[in-house]
Amino acid sequence: MPRCCGASLVSAADGDGSPQSLGLRIQDGNPRNKTALAPGHSLMDWIRLGNSGVDLTGVGGVPRVVTLSELANHNKQTDAWIAIRGVVFNVTRYMDFHPGGVDELMRGVGKDATKLFENVHAWVNYQSILQKCIVGRLNRGTSSTSSTSSVTERSITSANNCLSVTLGRSKCATTQKTVENSPESFNVNMDWRQTSNSITLFYQGVRNYSGVYYQLERLNDSKIIFRLILEKHIIIHEFDLTADVEWPPMCKRDFDTMQVDFTFTKKIKNIWKSQGSHTLLRESITNKRTYKEYEVLSNTSLCKLVNLLVLRTKDFLELIPAGRHVEVKMDVMGMEVSRSYTPVPPCLHPEDMAPNYTPDCICLMIKRYSNGALSPSITKLQPGQTLIMSNGLGAFVTESFDRYPVIHMLAGGTGLTVMLGIIQRALARRNVKLINLLNFNKDEDNMFYVAQLDKVSTEEKFKVTHILSQAGDKWEGRRGTVSGKLLNELIGECSPEGCVFTCGPKGFILSAKKYIQTLGWKPEQTYYFDD
Image (tube, rainbow, N blue to C red; front, side):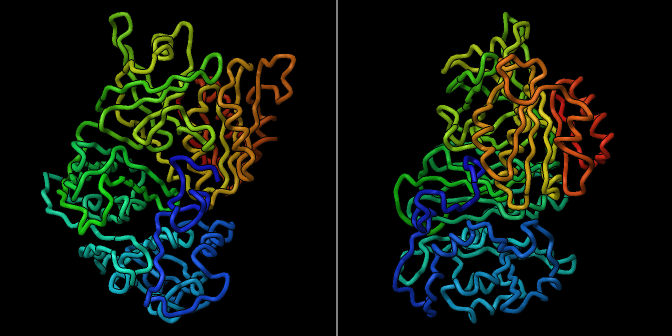
C-alpha cells in the first residue's frame, strides 16, 4: 500500500517490519507470558497475517456500530469480539497469538473489557496490535454512560513488561468557556502513549463525528495547543508537557478508525511519569476563516503549466480533510487578489514525496493562466517568499461516502487536485475495492502528475484512464470528451456499491452531471465540486 501521511498506524512496510520499527520494544522474560506460543504465532507472524489481506474483522472491513447485546453474542473462542475503550475488536484469529493464552483473553470476550484490560496490562499498545481487527464503535445505549474515568499513567521500565510503551487517558484541570450543552462537547477524549524516545497524543471517539480536522500550535518546546474542530464546536487542549519535544510531530492517520497519531520526539530520551498537565477548553465556532502567513519551501514544475508549492507557517500545523479548500491571498500590483485552492497530499507513493516537505506543511498544485489575476504571481514565488492563506474551508464530508466500496472519479484539468486527497484516503481504507479515475485534459501540455498516478495504478484497486480532447499525433491513449457513451463504457450504469465524484470547469461538470444522471446514478451517490 502506498504510504505517506495517510499511512496506517502500523505497517510491516515501515522500517524493516520488526517490532522495534513499529515503536514496540519487546523484552524477554515476561512472567505474564505464561503460555508458550506455537510455532508461527509470534508477534511478527501476527503482523504478517494482518498485512496478508485476510479479513480479520469478520465484517468485511466495513466499520459498524455494535450494541452491547450484539457484542454479548460473540462470546465464543471461534467467534470472539471484545470492546476496549469504546472500540470493538474481533479477536477470533488473535486467540492463538495472545501471549497470555486463550483462557486469559476469553475473560474479556463478549463484553466491554476496558477495566479488565487496564487492570492487567494498560501499557500494551493494543491499537497497533489489533488495528486490522476493528469491527466498529461500541454503542452503550442511552441507559449506560461511557467511561470517562482517568487511566493511571504507568511508567514501564521493568523487564517484567512485554512492551515498553505507556498508555493513559489524559488527566486534566478543566477550564471551560461558554459553550452550548451538546454531545460534541463531551464525547471526545484524548489519550497518550510513550516510548523512551517519543510521546504520542491522539483523540478517541473522533469517528463519531464527520468532517473533523486538527490544528496544532507550538508555543515553546513543551507547550502545545491542540484544536479539534467539529461542525459547531472547537475542543482545545493546552498542554504543558513534562519535558521538551521536537517540532513538528509525525502525523499518522488511520482512515478506517479515523484516529490520528501525533508523535513528538523527546529531546531527552527517557520514560515520563506523566505526560504533564493540560487545560481543556470548549468553544463555539464564531469565525470560521482565519489567515496566516506561509513561507514557500519549494516550487516545483510538474508540467509546462502546473506547479507544486510546498508551504509552511511558523509553529503551526493543520490537517485539512480531503475535498476541503483554502483561500490564498497575495498583493498583486498594489491590489489584494484571492483565490481558492484545494490542498493536495505530499505524495501518493513514497518515492514521489514533495521536495522539502515536513508534516507541518501544506501542498498546493496551481495551474498558471497567462491572463490570470493570481496564478502567474503564485507560480513565480521562490523559496523564502510568502503568501497569505486561510484555514480549511468547505462543507464536503468524505465520511458520508465511506459506505461505498467502489469510487468513480471524473477529473477535468485541475479538478484532479480535489481527487488526490480522496485517492490517498481510499488507498488506505480496507473496504475500498476499486478507485476508478478518469483524468480528462485538453492536450499533453496540460497533463500533470501523470507518472505519479501511473505508478500508483500498479495497486490492484486503483485504475486511471487518461483522456485527451485535442491530443497530438503521438498520443497513444484515449481521446475524446465527456460523453454518455464514454461514461457508460468506463463507469457504467448505477451500482449500489459505487459513488461518483466530479470536479472540473463549469461546462465539464454540467455535461458530466447530465450523463451520470442518465446512467441512473442517484443524488446521494454523487458529489460535484466547483473547480
